[in-house]
Length: 114
Image 1: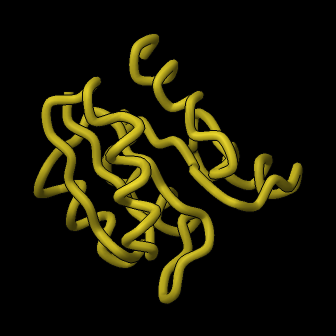
Image 2: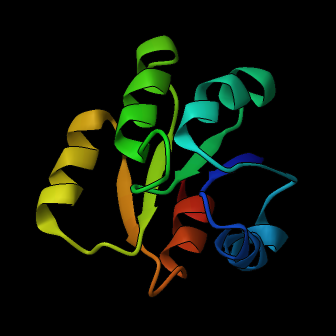
């Protein structure tokens, strides 16, 4: 399984990598939503783990961009913001799940159940 992590925080990308590393074959990273579509196109991951709030292009816009070109893409939002409106916005953008950064363990379940 190939996973793309999109997050503007390198320490958070490292933390996610640590949590899921034993469950996946390859992990790719990019640091902003603006790079996410190109990275998706290059790596064709099985799953994208997308931050919501990033510097240039946020995760909601990046999710919409990826889903427009690759409707079969599986995207999970990973955010420190545990807000119901953001969860709904993520769902409407095309994300299949929303995981809070305060507890990354649900990512393991998504990877093994998916």
